[in-house]
Image (cartoon, rainbow, N blue to C red; front, side):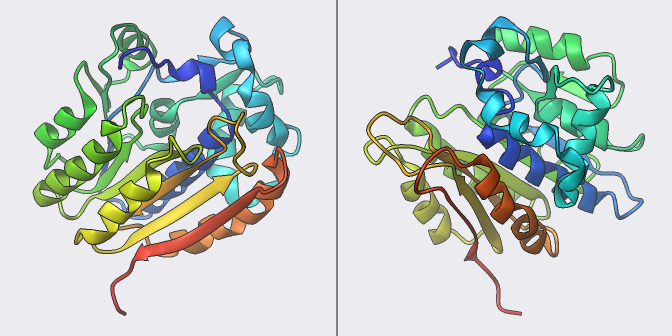
Length: 284
């Protein structure tokens, strides 16, 4: 359960989707002067050197952020996300990639807060080294599912929860549903953004998870998915999704604006597809 290391997958197609959506939500929160908080349940090390041994092992970033890097100025709908990466690589060479904590840290304002949870001993040491100097950031060495519920309701009372477990255990899919139920009872006004993998039919539990979430009374729930190829026997994760509870106004249109061309750009085989749909939506 504690073997997962984010660096192996930093900057891959799943990160591009997850972080582009995360950045848009944070930008929407910044439209009001009132402070907000971002809570990240499975934070990892915070930021990654793409030249490092772990990132180079499979070099998954080459088929993710690597495909966008040279034409980053052409992707205006993803500007908040790509702008942070450009800021981190000011010499024009793609060396560093922000995990969700660093992306949040660079996008929030002076009056905003960031609460990071990580259970893995080595990852949390990296996280403290990378983020601990910032007075807006609190690092918690604890299980993200338990920690999130314990920290709610937060101060300030506006904000975003990012839930991104490794899904190494199938129980994670249902721990997510249980955690969302407990969290929303304590903090009904928060925005919750949940990342999940799309795997081969035998291993994929995401459809069961989505059906379970649909049965709950979470209010407006938006789903955005990207699959870079059709699933085959030799593929592992061919895609991923972001589920957003209480999404900001027009987020569906903002995601749609980049996801169709992104699907074409990041396709790795036949069967690449995307969707942006409401899992649940209150009547207007």
